[in-house]
Image 1 (spheres, rainbow, N blue to C red):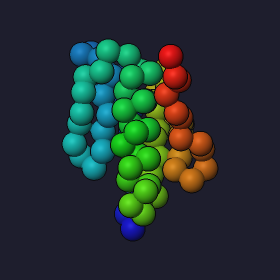
Image 2: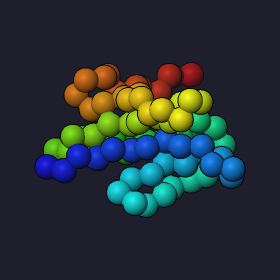
Image 3: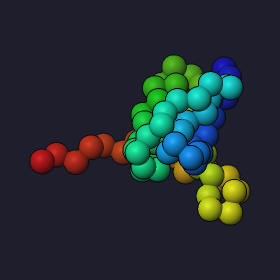
Image 4: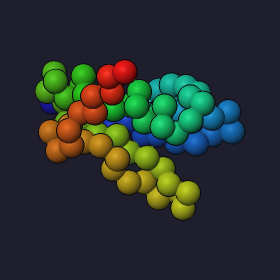
Length: 79
């Protein structure tokens, strides 16, 4: 199946997620954008996509933050 790369990038209006030419957001923080992207990538991985979340760092370089099948899916903490 296709590769699903979720790019988390900073724009003037906040953090955004880019996927296949589409842009989602803005999100108030990098952490909230990453959480949304990981959730979406997890769902994509479950249906057979090679899914990962890639984050743009302060040096404008991209690094893989999370990858389906490699990293554990974060489970929300129970109150």
